[in-house]
Length: 350
Ligand code: 13P
Ligand code: SF4
Image 1 (cartoon, rainbow, N blue to C red):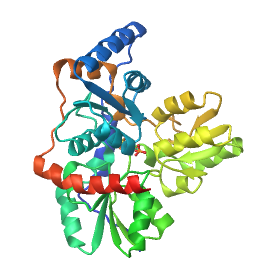
Image 2: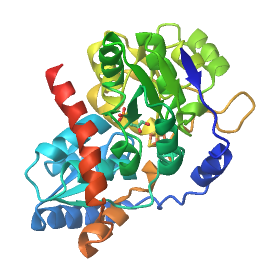
Image 3: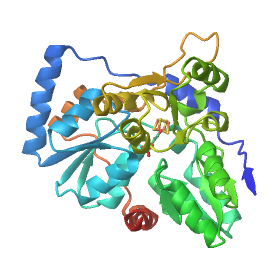
Image 4: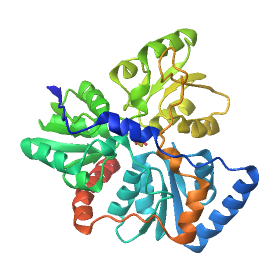
């Protein structure tokens, strides 16, 4: 069984509009970049702080994280790294759920983010009250939530998963005969259901970036680039996933570029990932999957507006002023820690 439930309370159009209205910080000049790099490096050192950045953030933030002993990765490894690193302050460049995950796993540490306004449409589409009510209506289901959710939603879950481990966890649960209540990404949930055959009900959330990839245009691009390998993040719609040579988390997609013999790739995920892909395989050809439809002015603008809110400017300001600290209610944090730790323990056994 695979049923997508519809809640009239979730206003997808309002969430899409919110994404369009995000204000993106201005680009830095080369001189400003140099000044900010030096300032941030000094502040990180003085404050015993480490910078952890997601692959979708600006290339400068990724460079800075790596130059200062920090880390750039997908959401699972960001959580792992922050948990294992001895620094007392973690600065998380990404979206809010990533900062909250760091705080849940490390309640004793100070967690800062360049901005507290970086949302995620999946998180926004899964409000705590409605979600808890939905879970209460399905007491015979194991509740599995994507990491892209609030601390309160995680606190109601049996399992938290990221895209890199979701299929393995669902397989494990299906083998035990458990029925799954999945939230919030309906496309990732549908993909997991198809792969594992698990009995699932799906919350109807979606990612504003990945839902825009267009199947017909992708087909045409593939015809022009017959040797290209198609790499797809599983937050994409089923008709995009159906055309993939490989479906995987951001880290798994980067690995495909470096570890396969293919020379050309069509990539259906946020284009922030191209920085790492180019760095890892400078001679390979990378093409963005089309995402706005025939006739539209924007064919390949797949970039998360909330990830783009992270900049050198607000990172420097955050460290200088000690602002944008993440707080999670202690009781909620304790409850959310259980399914998160379950995921980390499960991942360690793989
Ligand atoms: P990853 O877990 O693959 O990093 O994905 C997080 C995300 O938000 C993708 O849109
Ligand atoms: Fe959320 Fe999509 Fe942005 Fe990832 S790309 S953080 S899923 S809105």
